[in-house]
Each structure stands twice: as structure tokens, then as C-alpha cells.
Length: 211
Image (tube, rainbow, N blue to C red):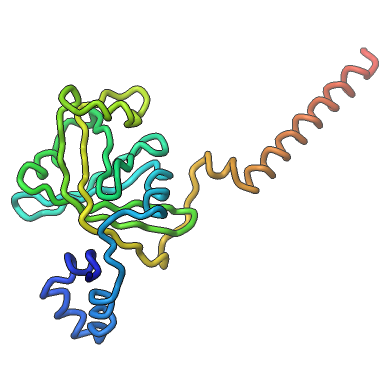
């Protein structure tokens, strides 16, 4: 079986550019001999479950791409099986550009980023959405971000995925990741030392003779 992601993305125009730039042979080998990458394996599922945000691209009827950021508690993008992921779509700015685009074409492209480890997972799929009140009972398994109202369930039926080169991904950390790291441990130790010194200073001042 050929590499699903390159089969979908290496269009005639892409192949033409690859030929012009002298990399067609390498990419052709990937397409012919690469892993199928059409079903999420253990590592992909673990990676998805650890994310707290992702980017999703759709295309409008006028041909313009539109990228939307989705964020929530870790694991809010849930793996239902090796071909399906889903999330609770909550009320946003109420422009509904992504939702409208999906009515015209259900094709989506997802970027899932792990900035600290400079890792990126790309997913191609077809999106299906159901009003929250009409969604199946498994919607209770989805994590809903706090203080938000779910409007619908979005299911993404995976067609292909690929891991991207880490080059040029700038490492970034959330406050929680920093606190859980050795840097966070040093910060906590320094804060404890500051508090200890403050207490010693307070006791020293209280022991001084008044007047």
C-alpha cells in the first residue's frame, strides 16, 4: 500500500515542482514505499491525547483557505478509534466560517503541535458535525472546556497523517509545562528560599529593641 498522505498531497503541480527542484525521486520513493499512515497507531493516539490545542484548515466556496485555532483542556481532542477523532465544538465569535466551509466541502487539514519537543503531526480527513443535543451518547466522553457551551460534536474521519520535520519549530512552553520541568523546580526552590529569608528578616526585626 502506498503512503496515504503523499498520495493525497502530491498533486500533478506538486510533482512538477519536485521535479524542477530535483527532489522528485526521493518523494516518489516515499509515496511508493512509505508506511500507509492511514490509521492512527499507538504513538499518534498518545500524541493526540496529550494536546491542548490544534489548528484546523478548511476551504471556502471561493477557494480561499481558512485556518482556525481550537484549544481546551489536555485531551479535549479525543480519539474514538484508529480512524476517528472528535471534539466538542463550543460557542466562539459566532462567525461560523469553518462550519460554513464544511457544508460546501467536508475536507479538513489539522496541525497538532508539540512546541517543547519540536514535533508536529499533520492529519487529513473528512469532518462531520452534529448538533450537541442530537449527538450520540459517547459525547459524554468528550471534554468540554470550562465556562463554555458546547454547540455541536465534530467528528473527523482520518484519511491520512504524517509527521513533520522538527526544523524551524520554535520551542515554547506553557506555564504548566514550565512548572513541571527542572526549571520549574528551581523556581519553586528559589521561591521557598525567598520566603525563608523573609521570615528570618521579619524575626530579626521583631527582636530589635524598640525605640
